[in-house]
Length: 91
Image (tube, rainbow, N blue to C red; front, side):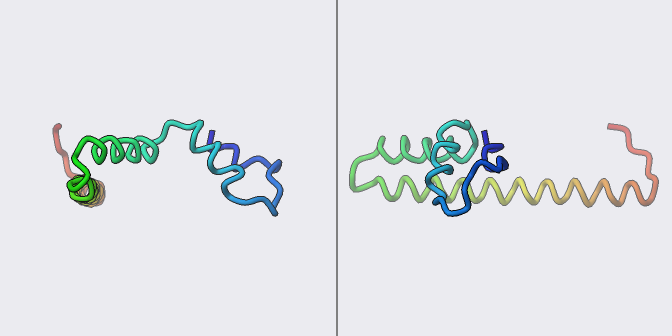
């Protein structure tokens, strides 16, 4: 559905929400899933603990993204070095 943004049918003077909201509602993306998970987690706690629950969830997500990015960077650098030195590694 994000291909709707690429169509020349969108007039340049329309707002983002005229096309952005329907596209976001039609596509099942990680952004929508993350938003729904955040709402479910926050609503499952008492009123006085909802902000803490949302903050812990966001912190866990940021730590997970940072670790995934670090791992991906290490794999890329390792494979780049391996290609340059023509190493023979059995996986």
